[in-house]
Amino acid sequence: MKELIEAIAKALVDNPDQVQVRPVEGEQVTVLELRVHPSDLGKVIGKQGRTARSIRTILGAAGMKLKRRFTLEILE
Amino acid sequence: MEGQPPPTPARSVESYLGAIEALVKQLARTGGFELGVTMRKAATPGEEIETPEFVVDFSGPDADLLLEKNASLLNALEYVVLKAVRLEEDLFGKITFDCNDWRCLRAEELKLMAQVAAERVVETGDSFALSPMSPRERRIIHLALRDQAGVRTVSEGAGSERKVVIHPASPPARKR
Image (tube, rainbow over the protein chains, first blue to last red):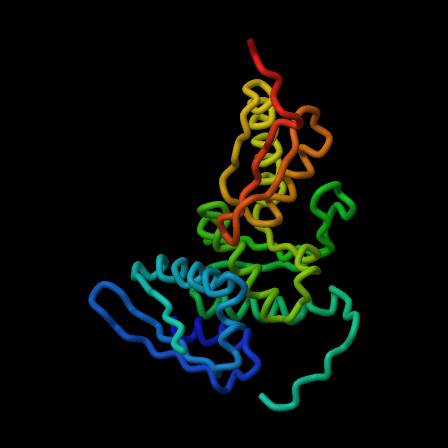
């Protein structure tokens, strides 16, 4: 799942080498913390959060296949 | 990554297809989605409402997952992938992601919904708000009711809450 978020984020940003994804495993849920270069924040969030919402939808669907809940946190 | 290519003006839509296919396949693999993808030319260019030139057509065991909740996964993949390949946003309509003819079926459903709602507005003289929709879906509603007598349509609200409201064309005649 980390690989999926990395692939999406690297494709969206201008500085793919600055993309970091850290999974934090909880009991019920895995939080994926995404860090990007500060100038790329807008690229992963998008207008009115539309890009971030789309990434979360993809993540949620992939999680359903694994029967596990994943959430995405975009860190500033 | 160093050495960004210089911006090339007026790239054809077709030139994005290779990058789109590669990214879609990468996301299907890393996301564990069992989906095949076929890139094809749109069958009916010049169809009245939606005029995509190319279709990114999905099939496979996860087609149902793709189309759940009004195709939220299909739409999310489309948006992220088209953004990622840097397609200019006013060209997003030229490349559409589809699966089992969902776009066409959904357009039919929306037109029917528009018709029923418009009839109700004409009957009651009250405005009627449809549920929030994407720009593409709102456009289908606006176009479906463009020549409908007795109503006018307006998009209201912001962001993901934006919806079409159908109003009576003129102030309702007072009943006595």
